[in-house]
Image (cartoon, rainbow, N blue to C red):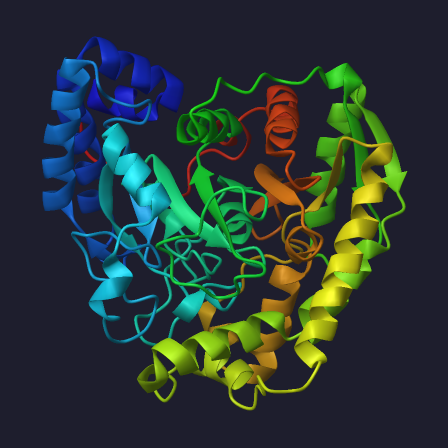
Length: 465
């Protein structure tokens, strides 16, 4: 009974909780049992797993449901990336020590979810200050990807524990952030769905910043349907309707996005696109040179490094010395006082955003592989000469969305030759998040949901009934 409830779509769970508020206890038992059943890996997906907070919040959710004052996400267990301020928990932001108390102040999204009656399961691991795409962290250890039981592979970053919390069943919705791909990369690498909202769509208040210019708030879910439900619940709007597949115009990004893909990545993405074309969608080879512009900005603009350095110098100067080497090597030597350089980079960014927007005149969405490479083994990321190229390739395709001001979605379409999940990335104009989700629902309607396409991660242990 409990397992069946937790496995249902979020919309169905919400309806059942509304009709029978006492079912929040079953959800609590389900996610707790799922966490307790997992192998004793160090680290777990959570920097701080809080079943006590979960229990207290589920009690409050039941009261709100009984009184008819609950929001759509009442009683839904949600994991929170350890960049968000949550009053019951310290914030570390992937660093070796707790940040000052002010960084535990709750911002817009956490406050909204608390008012709805959502239940937080704990704080999930992140790359230090969210500055990395693979998910490695030398302070806490790197979260293990459950899709390979024999090799310790990365789970994707920077929201390193978010996708794994969904895969193991200890959360039904996960909060992340996305500056260069930090929602979509871990979602793709763990076989989940990830939504990067448009810049400014959802406030980043109460979230430790990496790059205010590029930072966005996002969610990871088990399906596009769940993402659409959560999106509407957070925005307080009506549910997004699925697009007509036959009316969908899909632009396939050819510039650079398929270069250097691991075996099985291109094959799965192209097979998915052929299924969509067979279902009536129009598939177009898109001319999108701005994708290469975005990659150039990722490699050379220095915007995140400069903005993070300014934040560290102003707010947390004592944290620089202890910084994890993959982050520190990008920070040391960053000159935040270069006259005109930062402003020039922002102007180049604005020009790229404007140019990219015009490319959507003849397409509804652009698509490409979410991540070009199979998740590497953590041991392969231990040195700069091996870490740097893998990190860059993990970010290359997702950064298109960030540096061109787009909203983005990833959903699983198969497994690569190493047996690891492959994600298909959908990109839409900035501010067109509903259109993106509408297209995503249509794509999922044709291809199926993750459970149907790739099944369950072999490294996840099912709790006893």
